[in-house]
Structures are given as structure tokens and as C-alpha cells.
Length: 163
Length: 93
Image (cartoon, rainbow over all chains, first blue to last red; front, side):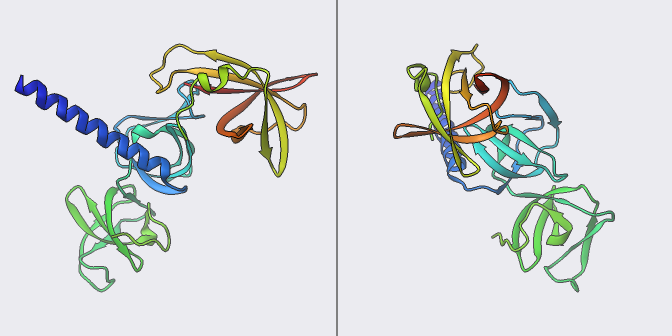
């Protein structure tokens, strides 16, 4: 009985959180940044399950830019510039970024070009963003973190700050 | 904007909606409102069919459809054209 009550309360709590997140998404102005929340997320040609799938994304945390909002669907653009529609449930508000360019990018100890380089991130590496300002972002790549120039990543606006 | 349902349209067949595109207002008449098999969509699955002027053909996009004092944002796709005008479909699935 106790387990059932706890389970029910948990369900109510999770449903409430989910509704709040959906509500928050609805009120956001486009464009805004998001990331793919699921390990398998289908992009479609239009905002409905009846529209053909164009790409299947199998990369959780990939940053995307939300261009349009329509009911439970979001028109997104991926780092390569491909755009299409995805169910809002497959997206997260978590801010992530992908390393761009042709060569590994230095990840510094501090947001300062002269600070030591902790490691170098290969192009295509995805990490969690935080503390972006002055042309630098703190990027956490599965536990290894450092500061990277915003010009070396996709997932943050040119003059955007993030705390 | 709430999740649209078939009830929002089923009683309005034959009515005209005003749609603005490129600074011009067009009249699109609602010709069909049909239930579709359940897809898991909140509010149920359904399709609408509108008929607009022969020209221009509105590109696939979200438009604001105004009916009386109400406004609905609807993603429509042109699906055909005959002497009576251009048909557009909106699917909620």
C-alpha cells in the first residue's frame, strides 16, 4: 500500500513537472537553443507523425536551434543547418554545444588564451555548456571540462552570456 | 494556444477563415473536418481541408486562421488545385 501511494505521488509529481516544462516551452520566443533529449529522435518534414521522417538522430545532447513552435512540435535546425520538425518531448532545455572546425580545439583552464590547456577537443565533440561570457564558454565533455572560445563551438549566440 | 481538437472545427464546416500572407488577406473555407485513427496526440487526431483562391498557392507554413473573434495557428499544405480554387490540408496527428 505504502509503495502504491509513493508511486502515485511520484507519478503526480513527474506529470506536474512535465506539464510545467511543456508550459515553459510554449511561452518561449523563437529562436532559442535546446538539445536533443533522446537517444533516438526522429526529425520529420512537417509537424505531425503523418509527415515522413527525414533524419533519425541517435545522438543525445546534440545542440539544436528552435526556429518555430507549433502545438507539440518544434521546427529545429541542427549544427549542419538541416531543419525539420521534432516532437517537443524529444527536446531538452539543457544547453549543449558541439565543437566545430577541422582541428582539435584547446580547452583552457580559465577563460584566458594564456591559461594552460587542459586537453584538446576534437571537432564533433558535444558537451554541456555553462558560464559563457566574453567570448568564452565552460564546456563539460562527460566529466572533462575546460574553457573554449565561443567561435570554436555551435550552440551559443555570438553575444550571448550564460550563467 | 491550446491543443486544437476536432471540436474546435467540426461545427464550422462551410465557414470562412481569414488568412494573412505577405500582407494580403485571403479567405479559406473549411470544407472537411475528419477524425483520424488515434495516434497518441493529446486532444485526438484529425484532419481539416480548406479551399482558398486559385492564386496564389500559399507555401507550406503556419498561418493564423481568423474566424470571428477567434484565431488559430494552423500548419497547412497545398494538396491540389482545380477550377474552384486551391485545396489545403492540415493534419493533427
